[in-house]
Image 1: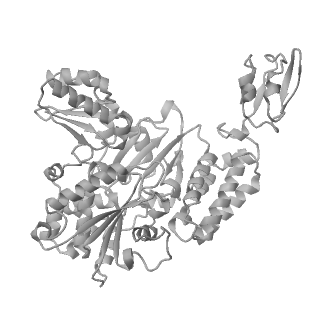
Image 2: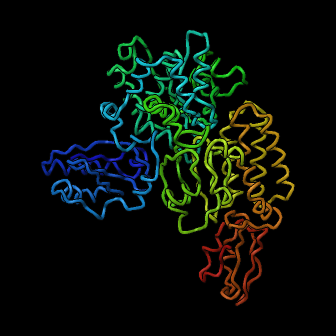
Image 3: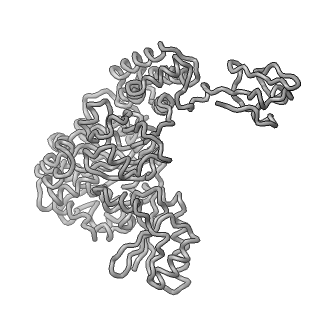
Length: 584
């Protein structure tokens, strides 16, 4: 018998460390010889903390939302007496959440101890590296990756095998492999979960890339806001060196490869390849003009393979099982699986992995359990600040690179933010533009100034000081920025605005033409009113109004609020003893 306690960032935030300590303490007090091990996030974030108990026959019992006070029952009845505590076990929809996925990248997350290399080796870890080193040539490795149709999971979807082959063909004797772990999209945590739950899978992919391209040094660029991921990566690198999977003369083949970790300061623009490599070099993280491309002159002006965490984590599966088996999953030219972070107004939030081409309907209403509170689905923001908005008409659209491109959206790194009927799409566009504008590096005028002006125009709309020409100005600016910005961040910055205008122009018009926020979200469109039947004219509200927006009123005669003057501070609502004032 053994116990696993999920201790990814989401589990720890929910109290998993306290739960694990309590279980360990109780096991000791009762004299039981049962190990309590750490594992990563299995993806059912809405049910954390998660405690898995494996009986001696290997049968799994999964307990969810386990707080320290629940540990007594689990230890006393299950661990000591062998009687599972039914009331704490995972509900049926939680079982379906996992059963309906196809896991390649995440298959070990929540199953093995990420800080124990022996557990990774026990489930087939580093077999692909051995095969690549001892049974395949660099040409054969690149061809196998090309034949698999694996495309970069960082957002662009560039064919991975083609990129590797381009680096392999470069004549330079020094080359690099770089892993982009700078996951900056709001609501995205796929790469973080892989690094926290199965770091060796990513490392193995990087080393194989080195074998394929002739590179002998790798860099992982990870944001410092991921301290747990960084800690487990460092442990994994040291263990891999001790076991001979990393460093000099790997597996006795004469091939050398080392991996360094570089911490980023959380700049969104450093997710762009040239800005990322500049940051590793100690320069300010700013994009450069291309060409030359990263495969020709990347890190330290040398040929560089640059892929993200999820891309590298797919490599061992392809080498072990073959490209044909990998291509059997997904859609043509969009092979394999994609990990998504499912967040927002959906019942089952967490991390999922599904075949490329899975529809939004299946993700939101099957895996996600539908929209919270039984409300109506309105839209989903896919691809973060660089992505777009999908609506009801896209529920049956296959989620793959090519299908999304046709409707003006993109997978991005894999964030899915679900929105219900009460979400104001103008506010959503404002949120993402505010994020992008703050994250602009400022190098090029279209992005630095253009996004600033777009944000001001959106601010005018949500603050009830715009007209229909504001929408026209937004569209004109968006077109200019897309066509003239230097890097991908700037070129895609207008996407959330363009997609919300395209899909929900009636909401924009309601704001600027009718003076109404249809969802009642934007505070500037709300009005404070006084109920004439309840108001007795006592004057308390008038006394506290800081802008003299309340007039009239006398004995048994109601006051009146001038909403053009009112700043909605709500002081009058607090002062009224008769609940005669409300905001609508």
